[in-house]
Image (tube, rainbow, N blue to C red; front, side):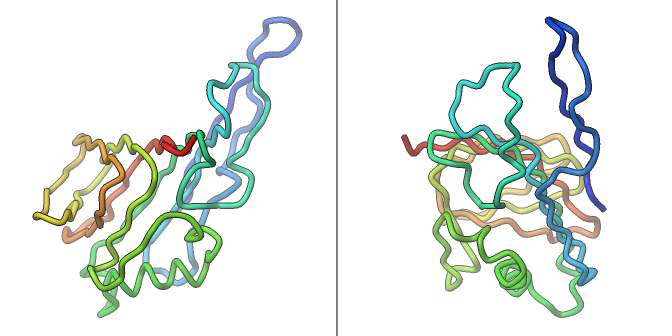
Length: 177
């Protein structure tokens, strides 16, 4: 259940071409069958990048946050809580932490608050499929396909209480100089 990523480039003076076509090099789709997925589509470690920059920093280690002063584009699939067979979403996050501990090396987590977390980023989020509840300290907001959110370093959590997987696209911009 991966994602296809096409990266373009320029060569031979000014001729465009496909640099790579395939799954992002840093994708996590656990074999547990829970339906959770994560892919770093593109990472920029030092904006502003040049359009001819051949670097693909998403191929490095997977982390929750982009590098300092960098940008990461992620696509996350959250399965419905009802499909977890009694495993709650907190346990799902625990499984992710076990499978990819390096990914959780950044950001802050508060399991006592229902796996609330925050990052030193401004996140530009759009829901591509399904629906998800964005939990905040003072309540929740339901986001559906096409809805957008700008997450600005606040404590939050995501919960899929629907019946279909929720696919979230997020561009995370580091606020760390």
